Amino acid sequence: MTQAERDRLVALRKAKKKLITQKQAAEEIGVTERQVRRLLRKLRRKGDRAVIHELRGRASNRKLPAESEQRAIAVLSMAKAGQWQPGRRRVIEVHQWRPRRSRCGELVQWDTSVHDWLEGRGEQIYLISMIDDATSRLFARFVRHDTSEENMRLLWAYLERFGRPLAFYTDKAGMFQVAVKTKRQEQREGRDWPEMPPTQIARALREMGIVWIPAHSPQAKGRVERQFLTAQDRLVKGMRVAGVRTMEAANAYLEKEYLPWWNQTLTVPPADAADAHRPLGKDHDLTAILSHVEPRQVANDYTVRYRGRIFQIHRQDIQVGMRKAMVRVEERLDGTIAVRFQDCYVRVRRGAESVRALPPAGGAAAQQPHPAQITQRKSDWMKNFSIRSAASLRQASQVSNARS
Image 1 (tube, rainbow, N blue to C red):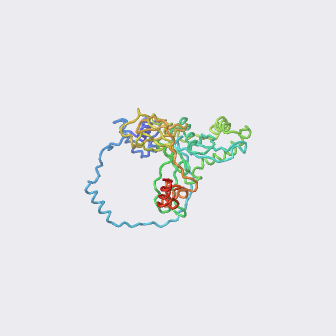
Image 2: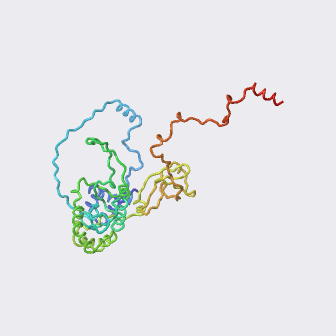
Image 3: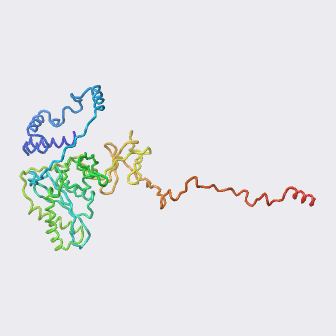
């Protein structure tokens, strides 16, 4: 049973126990109310297997024979396909106010504010906020850098306190979405956007079954933007009076003074009292999910290379089929490294550094001569020997006769 099927089963059980209405269950699952009633009847008959599709593992009845499929491909490959580009139509955009979500946890807006929060009394810090769309309940923290790691730490704290929301609503920052790279002076209008790999946060949300919704404009996430305007006024003044000068003191004031005041004064009751947050399951290991994850290939000597380092897999953890296979390398938020092969983790130990030999300054080609220009050095065995300066054979014989 997949995670999506488990979430569907939780919603159906709530509807069965009258904790939520069938309409709310249909909105949470993404089907009609009529389908919800069918699933509830099926749940009474078959139990938890009601959420599993009955055709799983079976071939489709509409599948064409292999012979017909090959013949159709041959015919289509010979046809010439033309391209049709629709003309541009003038669209008048009208922005309307979007009503709040009905339940707490259906949608949470997430953003970061860059501001001089300490008014020059200390270092530069950033405020990351998560505000519930239905109730305006605020959850925030100050960080030194607006990075994926810091946002993951705040996400970890939110999940442990409230559970998994149905969706997060953010901007299109680089930590949430990989931008499509285009050449200079190139436009992508009228072209299909290529599918880009997910970012680390997008992957983590997908593994936890949380929907990510991008905002196309700052006005679209106006609730969290207006919250920042209030914080830049009241929160800044409060920290000024309290004499806050460090990030630690700013977070202490935020937790003890500002967030309690906000959640008691500026929040509103939801239209529906039911909580849409889902609890963390046994398969939701936040230590593994909220990590920097990259795939790596196991070498023939059962080593894995990651960030210029070599990790040797323990001999006791070597399995059949591991050589040349792909493993999941997790760099945890605490700096430790974990390697997972299939569904189990393997122990590794750090080996030698993998350092490349750098060329000398100016380039290797400029320093090393061409092989054709290299002259071989002559041997010294004939040094100080000259045939011309030596005595002739006649002179040598005369000298020999005179001595005798």
